[in-house]
Image (cartoon, rainbow, N blue to C red; front, side):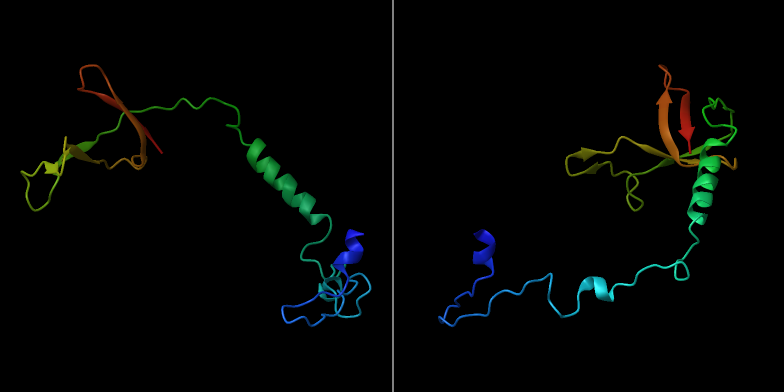
Length: 135
């Protein structure tokens, strides 16, 4: 019943009858499936078995690495120069921004090629040494 009512002629605001809704399965106009390209063997971007090769290469790259599953325990000491950073470049004595109080900052510089991109920093209880995790 609901399907019959959906395809029945409908009335518009000015009481003209609109044509019945078409049966989409038997419509003779262009259908999406008629105009979308189908992949055949000669039109494919890659051959049928090549995607399996790419999958195997990816799995070997991820799971075949010698460090996969191994603990990475590599630490070393490097020389780092630290320079204090002021809150304002213009007024070096300024320490507030509204209700915020500048507690201090440092710029850390090193010639070590592995230094940079610190992910985490922790200090000892005295505050005179720190350990950092670098990316």
